[in-house]
Image (cartoon, rainbow over all chains, first blue to last red; front, side, top):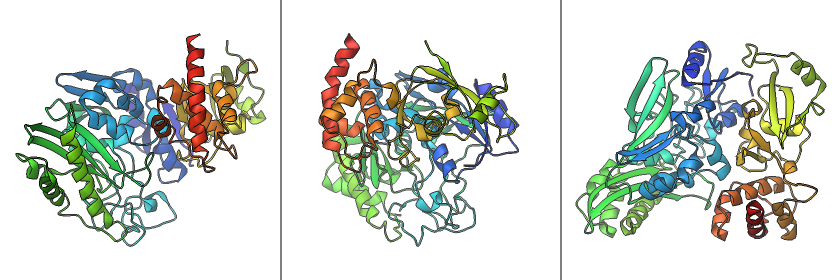
Length: 334
Length: 190
């Protein structure tokens, strides 16, 4: 690991001052550290300043608030605390499940929600610096995964420059529920839809988010809606626990008398960014959830899917995962 | 009461720590940083390279070699310790960032010459073969019970999944957690 300067920021203002002062160098905020320390050891991330923001946990950054307007999650809330929250489990089960099915309890105790949505891909060519070709790590160098071992890689949202999968789960729940995020930066605060946080790889896969330099996530807001209670996260993976998704689906369903009034769908394990399946939602509105309708929705969700060899199976697996998740959501007793 | 000890600190570290009042924010990233860490109820005044993980600090600076370095990347759970009572991975924790927190390692579990009920349960149920993952398993299991995530076999397996055992002692580990659970609950009520 390369040397760095460590600073502990006692307040939000102090964090902003520290990151502004470090403007000439590469600075990283440190929350749970489960991505940062891992990738610093691998020499993939090379911050020269590490600004520890964990003291902000005692402020609004570390709070969970629920009322009839919705759910507010501070970005320094730990994954385990949101996953174990009884009201979130009951009223926003897709959020609790997406967190509970991710990582291990040790990692969930450490990792913050803000860091979770910013976690880096698990693409082995990104993580292994002995491969020169990685457009994400080394812009313009090519993509070793395109013709390499790409069983875990994405089939939706890919480009000729990058097919790395977005590794998270919680982000799919957020995008399904139309969440927004509050940001603070050296130039002030702003709020953006969560759907605008991540960038498609396109021809600049090194630019993963729309965050401005020094900007910090303060909180996530999930609006209350008729579909949040009948919601779930289904994750299909190589082992039963503590594994990244091969395919996953976040579903939030509002149905009356067996008919879909509205539905929110996001897909994981198969995409380069948190992935909202709007086409599948359109297919289902006004219909009953049955074998035919879920099959049509699944086909619509994967119209643009493209496999790269080892990951061809993800198209069919993704469709089946979505179909099963929809049927489970329809059958939920709430 | 916490006691202050510098006995296990290497000589270079003692010299650096002697520079009283050294600023927390250093401009030279290669200069050792000073910190006081509370481990198993004792305060340790230390100076170390800022890159030092909590795991390396425990093992290499303090001789607490119970916590194991398996993968060093947060994938195996062998380095599990408790931070303010919550289980975390010491390999992905910067030692400098653990200041002001209560750190409990496997060496801090036994009390008054008696093994912790979870340690005894691992012995009684043969919850290991080679033993390398065992300190991490036991720390994780203690937390699993405290979290109230040890109510069924399935729940124990799910919440212990962050601790890999390549000898595959898993069934016996589940049995050990089940044995210790009521004993820990009795102990905490007393």
